[in-house]
Amino acid sequence: MKKIIAAAVLAVFGVIATAPVWAHSGGTDKNGCHMNHKTGTRHCH
Image (cartoon, rainbow, N blue to C red; front, side, top):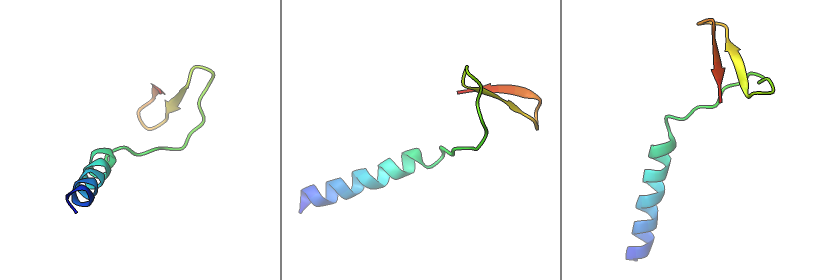
């Protein structure tokens, strides 16, 4: 039972830790970069 609870707690922390990461659309060039038209800056991955 303790292993199940520990696994559940780790799963919840895993979701919380990755929650702020959001993907966005937009094509990239050969260097993995694209233009952010709102700020006028180039953004690379």
